Every structure is written in structure tokens, then in C-alpha cells.
Image (cartoon, rainbow, N blue to C red; front, side, top):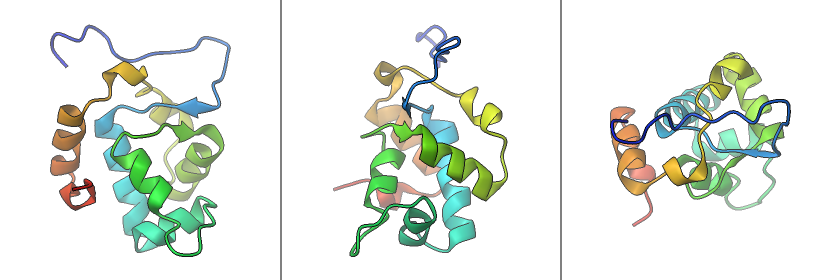
Length: 118
């Protein structure tokens, strides 16, 4: 995180509908969710994604930093993996902080490089 200043971002009293989470926390919580649910698709179902063929697609997009977490689904994941939402929100960042390098490093740290799109 050197050279980025403080990437962690807080909206004050305003709660956004979608939240960008720093790669290291994003990889951790999704890894814990996959471990508990059994698979990426099962985690997608837990988070109420309803695609018949691949409910984990949106979870994968969040994991690799292509889209933000919808607040409702982040709350659901926090409850599922039993981590307080406030703890996760400490890792809220601006979208500009998300890049392929820091995402790749976080995924590698948690043994999840297989989820990067080729």
C-alpha cells in the first residue's frame, strides 16, 4: 500500500448501495464463504444470486474486482461467515484502488488464483 496514501474510504453518514472492499479482505471473506458453502456456486446461492447455470458468476466478478459488493449481499456474507460487517467495512476503498496487481497478490495469498479470468 505504499505510495497510495490511505486508500480506505468512508462515506460518513451516507451508506452506499455498492461497496468496494480492499483485495486482501475481499479475497479473505469470499474464501471463507466458499469454504463454508462448499463451492463458488453454492456461495452464490447463499448470497441470493439466482442464475440457473452459474450463480457464482457475480461472486467471481466481485472477487476479481470487476464489480463492487451490493450492500445487501455483503451483509448476508458477513452473517454467513460470522464476521461483523463493521470489521469488513474498515476495508472499504475507492474504486481507483482496485487494480489487477493488488487483486492478483490477494488471490495468490489465499490460494485462489484459479478464479482469475483467462
